Structures are given as C-alpha cells and as structure tokens.
Image 1 (spheres, rainbow, N blue to C red):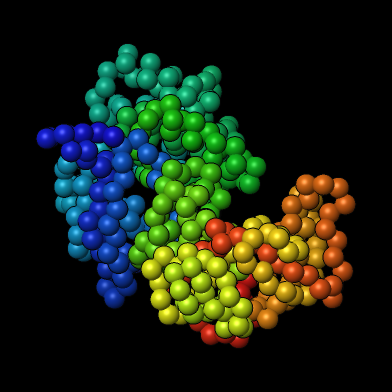
Image 2: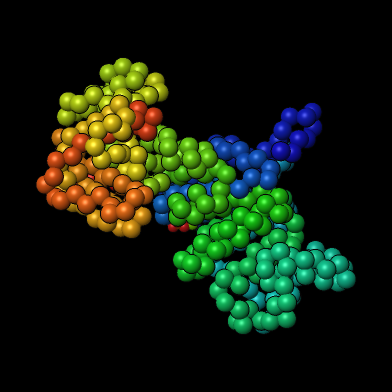
Length: 369
Ligand SMILES: Nc1ncnc2c1ncn2[C@@H]1O[C@H](COP(=O)(O)OP(=O)(O)OP(=O)(O)O)[C@@H](O)[C@H]1O
Ligand SMILES: [Mg+2]
C-alpha cells in the first residue's frame, strides 16, 4: 500500500459519501469506499444500480452532486479526465479502424509528447504483455474480438496510469473467450501492479478476478468484502441471492445462536447481534442428504432430483419451505432419489448465515433464489 505524507497509508482511490443525481433519478446514493493501491476491486450489481456512473465519476466524465473523490491524496472533483491519472477501458473499445494496432496503442503516448524512439519500445512491451506480440502491423478489423479487447487494454496500460477503470470490458466476448480473458486480466494486473477498478454484473467474473467486491443495489453498496466472505457470510438477502443460490428460511431470533423458524423448527446460527425477524440462510452445497451433517436438521420430501454431472440437484419440500440441495457426485452412481422419497436434510451451524427478514412466510418457490 502506498504511504504518503506522515506515513499513514493513503488509499489509491477514495470515495466519500458520493451522490449523483440526474434530475430526479438518484443514480448513486451515498457511496463511500477505499480502494488500496495495487488491488483488484470489482463493483458488482444488477443493471441500473449505479456502477457505470460511479466509474465515470472516478474517471472525471461525470461530476458528483455531493461528496468527494480522491486519487491518492488529491481531491480530483472538478478536474477534467485528462488531468486525472486514470485510464478507462469501456465495453465498446472504439479502436481507430484505419490505424495499425501499434499506432492505436501509441496514440496516447504521442499526444503526451513521448518521443518516437521511446514510444516504439513501450508499445512493443505492452503488446507483448497482453499477448499480441507480432500483431502490431495489423489493422483492428484483422483481429478477433478478444484480440481487439486486448488492444484496448494495451492502449490504456501503455500510459502507466495510476488506476485502470474497466467498465464491463469483456461484455462483447463469447463465454469461452471471456473466461480466458478474465484470467489474462488478472495475470496482467499482477504483473503491472496497478489498481484495477472493474465493473460487472457477472458474479462469477467478479469472484474470479477481484480481491474485494462491492455489491451494489439501488445506488448503494450493500456489502463489501473478499469474494469468500460475501459468499459465505452475505449480510443481506440481496447479496445472498446475487452471489449464487441460497435457501432462506424466515424466522425470529431466539438467542445469540438460535433462530425459531416460522414453521416451528430451531436453527442454530450465529445471529451476529441481530434480533427480531430474520431469515436463516444456507447454500445448497452445504446441505447433506441424511442426518449427521451438523446441528441443523429439517425433514422433507423429495419433489425433484436432477443428475447434472458434478452434482445432483435435489429439490426438497419441507415445512419451512422448498430447499435446494446440491449433492456432490464424488463417488459413482450419484444420489438418485425418487420424487416422493422422505429425506432428512442436515447442515452445520457454521454453514448458516443470517440476513434481515425477507418478507412474508408464504413464499414457497421463491425461497430458492
Ligand atoms: N445521463 C443520465 N441521465 C439520466 N439518468 C441517468 C444517466 N446516466 C445514468 N442514469 C441513470 O442512473 C442509474 C444508474 O445508471 P448506471 O449506468 O450507472 O447503471 P449500471 O449499474 O452501470 O447499469 P448497467 O449494468 O446496465 O450498465 C440508472 O437508473 C440510469 O438510468
Ligand atoms: Mg453500466
């Protein structure tokens, strides 16, 4: 982490109570966040939650209605984009079609007045880094989508910005190429050690790449943490549902380690200071078919069972609601349970997370989010 001034570490990017209103639309509603130098930070959330607007304010393409934005120790609000030490890679990478790849990448350096001799060396180095060594003489239309995306990345990286802003940069690529580029981007980020701020609505993409993820909803950050923490300990029903599948069982806190479900059963869970109405959550893969899987047990009836290769997906109807279970197919034969079979579900206290109440008790199918 960078330290400046009296030795206190200074975040590379810092937002303080940032609000952005467009007329009566509140696009960003009081976001505060610190992004350490050299980290890979993702903003994840559904369409319209304010990700792009937040990124554009960091880049200087939009000014906040309220709040402050710092790059290092400098308050950059009011500075135009070219005076901020950041570069942005947008989803539509807009390369210059008539220019070679080399010239596309060199463009920013040329504008900055970097000498021709130095330009050539830096361009070659960056093209090598993004895996395009030897393709510098081609034109953009002679490259695949993924290669063009790398050119856009090279064009941003060549300026050695302090922070790289990425707005759904892999959106135009097919799934296979996306996966490959996700790992490539992460490798590049490790190699160059810049701070990356990455915007996506794809939870798997965020989890693959980021050290820390801010899950956004309605212009606010609902939860911020490393991928594992968000997945294992989601703080809200929204986060639980946005990152993977979860079973949420409504109930009432009965003690520091116990929730009385509306259906009457007791579930052991660390309620983390909550009182009153809550929901106990458990991920489908943490549930064992049969007793003995931990302190929590529910009896039910299999309503569906589907063999999907690595796991068998079982839907179980219980008094507390419909539960989804992923049983790993580690052995042979899978877990083929006929519909109508009685089954006991069990899982540990540790695997149980607690979120604020998710609403009424007659949600049935919707409990599997
Ligand atoms: N220039 C603008 N004028 C008015 N409203 C805007 C403007 N830009 C964004 N908004 C609104 O602000 C909200 C947040 O938009 P934003 O583009 O930040 O969402 P997003 O999270 O990036 O979504 P997506 O995943 O679809 O790209 C939306 O309701 C959007 O309609
Ligand atoms: Mg967007």
